[in-house]
Every structure is written in C-alpha cells, then in structure tokens.
Length: 390
Ligand code: MTE
Ligand code: CO
Image 1 (cartoon, rainbow, N blue to C red):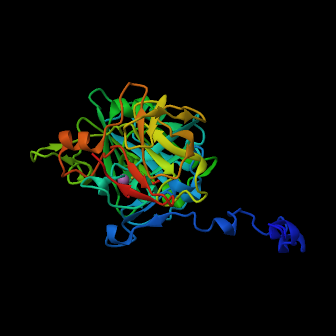
Image 2: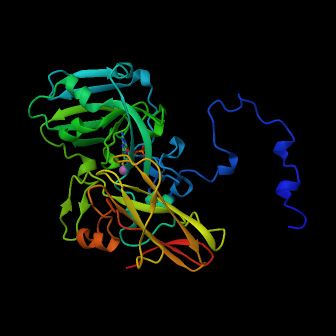
Image 3: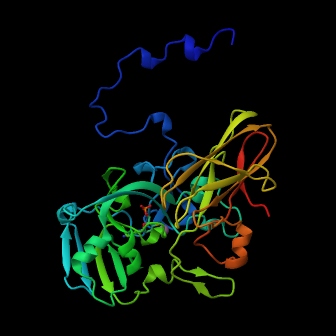
C-alpha cells in the first residue's frame, strides 16, 4: 500500500470525459459490470429452448422484489407476441351472461396492487434423488416475486353471473400451447387477479403480456399467461397439465393430484455456489429468501454446522401474505468449513421439512413440490457446493 491505492491515486476514464446524455437509454438497462446477472437456461434439461425454462439469478439479488428482466420464464410454446388491440378475454360456460372483454374494458374495472411469489411446482424437482445442480439459481430459481396490478377475478365472474353448480373454472392461454388449467371456483372468487402490470410496468411478453392470471400461493402452472378464455363448469377438465403433468407419483405407484398450494420453503442465496465467500475469515453476511403459499414467514432458522445448532435469522423487509421474505444472519467466520441450511416456519405453524423427511412420505418418484431443506457445503477457501447430508 506504500505506493497508494491506484483506485484513489489515478484518474479513471469516467472522470475525464462527459458521460452519455439523458437520451442515451430511454428505457434503462443495468450497468455493463452487472452483465453476469442474468436468467440462465440449463441446456440438458429440455430438448429445445422454445419449450423450456430459464432461472432467476437468486444468488445475485437482494430484498424481495424480482426485477422484471430477471423473472424466470417457463413456457410450453415459446413467448406469444400478442397485440393488445387484438386481445380478448372471454367468459362463458355456466354463466348468466357470456362476456368478451377488450383490454380497454378491463381497465374500467376497479383494480388492486398485490405482491406475490410465483413458484413453478417443478422448482427443485431435479434434486429429488440427491444434490444435482450447483447454484441456487438452478436449484431454486423457478420463482419470482413482483407487484401485480390487476382486476379481482371475482368482479369479472360477478359480472358474468356464475350459475349455481358452476364450481370450476377453466383458464386458457392464447399461446400456441393454448395451455389450460382447472381452478376451483372458491379460489377464483377468493384472491385471484387478472393482471396486466408487474412492478408498475406492463407485463413483459414472457410473463404473459398483455394479460395473465394470478393465483396467489398456488403452483405456477395455474397462472395462465396470455389469458384469453375462462369457462365455468361443474367439474374439473382433467387436461394434460393436471394429469400427465403436475401430478405427484408416490412410492407405492399411486399419484397425488390437484396439489395446488406451495408449501413453505427457503434457501440461502449467499454464500452459495454462485456466491462464494471471497473475503476470507471475519465478519460475514449470510442471506436468503423464504416463502409460503399459505401465508407469511414469521421465522427462519439457519445453521452453519449442518443442523447441530440452529439460530433464528433476522427478517428484513415487508412480510406480506404469499410473498417472498428476506432473511439475514451476520456471523464471524473462523475460516473453517461450513454446512449451511435454512428452515422456514410459516404463519400456519408449518415447518419446512428435511429432504429425507419429504422422501419418507412422498417416495423418490416425485418431481414437483420439493420444498426440502437445502444444504451448501462451504470449504476453507469459501467455495460453496450443493450437497446432501442426513
Ligand atoms: N401459461 C401459458 N399460456 N403457457 C405456458 O406455457 N407456463 C406455466 C404458467 N403459465 C405457461 C403458462 C408454467 S409451468 C409456469 S411455472 C408459469 O406460467 C411461469 O410463469 P413465468 O414465465 O412468468 O415465470
Ligand atoms: Co411451471
């Protein structure tokens, strides 16, 4: 240090010329130094990037809101590029009135703003049989958490007038997959939204522009994007996404069906394989996220020694129903290897299980609804790896 810190003693280029003006980026983009923070695909997971998934870079984010450009994408026929002027939402079936709404019509209904997480039921699905993917982006990144602006679905259904016996709703997307899901009327009338904004701006095309269904706390597959049709019926439709997919095969060969609610879950985002400890021993910040489809997360426990001793983490940020929560644990790292885990408690009293406990009930055939406790092994260099301990 005798020669002085060049970051202080030399003039960097940005102090010697004028920077770009206010017209240079009319729709802003992140600093080029953040270029590594992006959604990423896992090539071998799916046959083709069109019917595929990419993952939210959870390891690089903080707070609870996912920036729109980093929200993971899952679509079965690529992104539909829908012209909002040509888009219609139809409600029909067991209703007094069959209705068709334009986007302009929908903007004349009272709207609400609510923050919710959306988690694909297949999140962590690769991890059922043991540690697989090295990084929370890949093990837990099929989730995002944004503020939606939309019309309560209840208001549209009231306008249509649901006939007695109308107990189910089929939601259909306008993409080439015309993806459909059956939703019980009780949920539709409770807290679902027909949303057109996320984090204040229009939905991104990959998130269903111009219109998507928001089904708070329930598996992401039901949040139909490019929403074009709602049919009221007296029973579920048993379509592809609720039979061959999004059904959990148990150990004895029977299957769980209609497993809509997302169980409480958490993950440490740093330190983690993509966010190693680079500063050596000393004060260290551990952080992560937790969520539950049944309410809020009043408490998260963390362990540094693979579950021998647990401490309560510090929650920071808003605690909203069915929204992501942020936790921290500041500790003095002595430079020894660590086994990091987090365990979420939700407002119903449910506690996130170990992966072993989950497998005892669900067997090893499952893909969906893996909310087991994640372990990161940190070595003396601060590098972290996805492991499983029992
Ligand atoms: N809606 C339509 N129309 N088509 C789709 O392929 N994919 C579903 C759901 N809605 C899908 C869809 C699945 S499986 C998930 S997990 C979520 O959208 C993903 O939402 P996202 O792309 O905003 O992350
Ligand atoms: Co999904």
